[in-house]
Image 1 (spheres, helix red, strand yellow):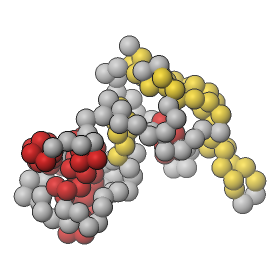
Image 2 (cartoon, rainbow, N blue to C red):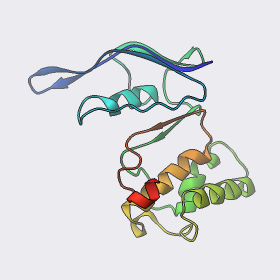
Image 3 (tube, rainbow, N blue to C red):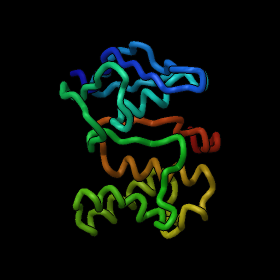
Length: 171
């Protein structure tokens, strides 16, 4: 069953010397349960495509569909792990992981249980009370991954999520 479809996605940005074409008529579909990796050199449009798929940016042309429905912005069905850590610096690791759950109205007890489950899953047990500035780059990225996973999105979009992780953690 088709989960995600991109149809004729193009994205143009204003550059110093005129328009810059980042994506040109990109089309593909992803079936439920499929794992897809988009690779290419720096600046080729991978992040732009992910931002469009996540509903954070609009395509200049084309459309994105999730389960047959055209998207018009971010949705709970899609979770994003960004290239940067995107953690709230004033919240602890646990509170960062709980944040989306809290916004969804999940009761505190369930938020705590879910957050601790995903904190453990990414290997950050013992750092629940740490603030982001007390963590290494790899630990911050793992906290961001835990936060996204805790919301259990149907589609997980990750922009270079393992770049800050050491080789052992990547495995």
